[in-house]
Length: 411
Length: 106
Image (tube, rainbow over all chains, first blue to last red; front, side):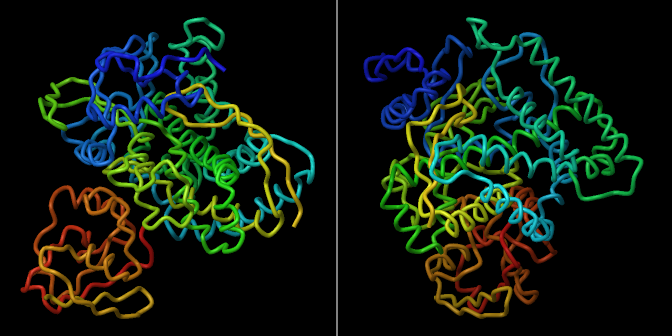
């Protein structure tokens, strides 16, 4: 637990900066965003950590920014912060059209409906194996044993990465989302150490890439990239960037939603009862969890010209941050937005996947993994009981859990 | 009141009366016609209200905007008669419109 930060209502509005990772780790960010949505929905602050930027906190404004890629560029990066050592591997989420469109199109077949239908039995078999291997009646960390294990296995399959080395994917994903440039006390890895680890990642993927390029095309992400005209000639750093994108996109998000589903159903026990009584709510429960958790807290853009948003004049070159984590709690669009309601009407109406051309490409795969997980949990356990408050990730980007102690109750 | 027929992927037909000014997407959602998700709520920003316009109606429904073309790139099984149903606004000239749903919204 970090030092308690000041109550946002005691800070002068013009100084209010919701970006500190400590806020998110302590769950103190909610009050900051509540105040911003009410008093200054498009908010400018000169941040100590990140410099001057605009916060966009309401659902409709977020959708406007996200779907106007010609006004708000995704280059050169889509998260707050900058590298002090000039280490910013290019990736297609942080590109504008036409390059973005070409590279994204190369990998989308991996998550097309036909491909998902083929993956379903494999995913179900793995979920069953993981759940059957869990201890009943004793405490364990759900994050490690279930959320990380299942998403890592899935990633290994999507990349056709050597299965016995799959823990490396999780490791690289965790390193990729660290903010060493913010680690003023030097407790964690330095930026140089982080770069070196990701260069090992690049090395390993280059080997596999070369192997795939020499083989017949397959449906895994590396083979698709190696054989598509738009991406076959990628520079090594661009390969690394896109690998990081696909690893983080497929890993942290689904992992933390898996943990969040257990946590939320325990925080709202009447919703857990509703789910047990009627498992047909699983589909909307998954969407509601993705909204309530908001696995990625924000995305960043740069204005390409002078423009206006919510009555504020945004200048060309200004940094604009869409706080998805706030948009999903916007009461003007989502009734009782702080409550977790598994049969919420129009549960898919949330901003977690983003909107516009950068909208999450793996959203249907993520939903399928979560659906299968809960179909199998309900057939095995009467309750996954959360034993204490979880420990959380120190980040304004990944809204995640590192430790969620649970105990399983048999049917 | 323009009347629209939605045909699900499995062939089930739903004929409903729409209100002028509403979109083909909104009319489906209001009448609980299955097969259109409309995650973004009508902002041409998510591509989950993909439909196929019956060939006889292609001219009447008008042209795709550049943003609609970009968003259709995200959808699955896009054909020449693919549209995002939130981008087709109803009026009397569309009375009798027939649209078909894809197998799933992706």
